[in-house]
Image (cartoon, rainbow, N blue to C red; front, side):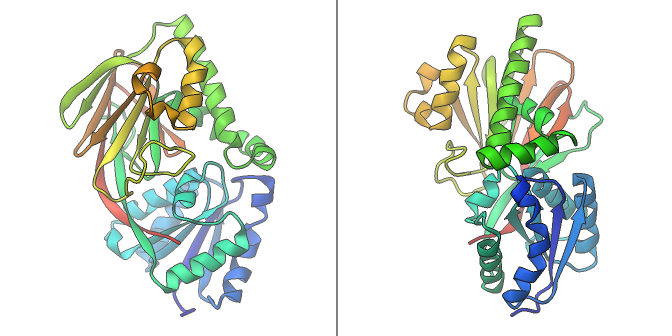
Length: 332
């Protein structure tokens, strides 16, 4: 039972100050559960986490646990894809040590490190996993390669959040914010700053008008405050795709129309408590189910950012999304 090879990849600065101390306890806690074939790799950057994941899988690792936030998890996911190995063979876990750990929460993983390791031990031994779709994001006119994510992505305010949450210096203040306000503290600060940035941009430049294509057909042309892409139910912190399985073969776009700055705070309030679903027309809320492809196109040819599960992808002319693969996520 305890001889299964488990590789844990941790980023040094993710989550609250308290979370930073979790890393050194991972191996001892696994040993207490009888897991003696566990290796820990600590890296400083997401790019290093991605590279290490690829190396491990190519040399035989099939159980990978991400110890970090959504950015770390996303980098490790892309490392799995880079390996070229059939992902049916891989089990990927989310040890919550970061901000906005939506996938970790959805999988039932506790924030407490002792309880989390016990859950991982039981789930790995009993092969408890959830199939999850992987969404690919492509901008054909951009020099950036395709990106992949599980969880959430987005544009406009959602697209600008990583600008305030993912550079190296900000990692330190994220630790303080997470300590004071919980793991969503940095997200809400980032969202507030992204809202301010968008507001200033709209005052100086003209607002961006978006065309939305679902499964090849245009479904909307409008101005938006936020566009949110998810591949299923991510729990009460992003409560739109309620009860939708992560591996359904479909994904979703939720968009909040730009009804002016004076209504924005109320729109966001009703979005976060899900009451926006009760009166979508009043609050400018749109929802789309995507079976094959999603394309969003701004009315300009300059670079615009897309949020890829907490990191930035710069796009030009349009961004296209589709489900490209599936992976097994370790679940409670």
